[in-house]
Length: 115
Image (cartoon, rainbow, N blue to C red):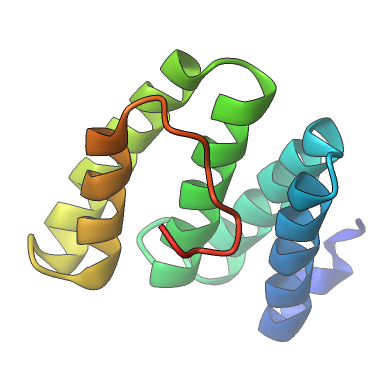
């Protein structure tokens, strides 16, 4: 999508949800592309340490596990956990969610968020 979405956080939020829906619908490669693009634009709009950026990074890491292999998502999740702990703290819900995903190992991702 064009960089014009940079001026609108709600557009990025919608595109993040589109990436999630694409993954659920079985279009994981397309979902990965969309989520990567959203991360890039969120980093420009909000910064790399923003909770919205972290949330999209989380979904990107999970979809990576579906498309590629769960082991390829682990380094992404480890980096995200480190960043969440640094910015949000050990007990923040986002940090806990990433930690739980890491502990789950190769369990399939639940795109609904009901893990």
